[in-house]
Image (cartoon, rainbow, N blue to C red; front, side, top):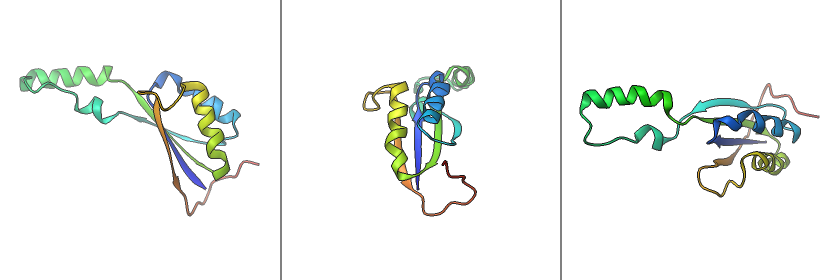
Length: 115
């Protein structure tokens, strides 16, 4: 089993990605709202503390949203899942599309196998 993690940079494509994953045979996933480090740390050194704080409050509402999608899948499902993701978002090798990686999973309990 593998934990496939996909960080989706374009929040508006979330439903389409999940639908395409379902069509590829991925039985379940967990979606977490996330924000990239560059978005959190982006600031001007010359800001006065007060104005910086106000800007921070305003920017939190307009900060680009991302989603992190977690899926525990069989090893042979990894490539079909990545293919499904790329059908929606495009080539992950392009900048600002997203990031995908896997981590081996040694133990699971409570995960239903898709058959």
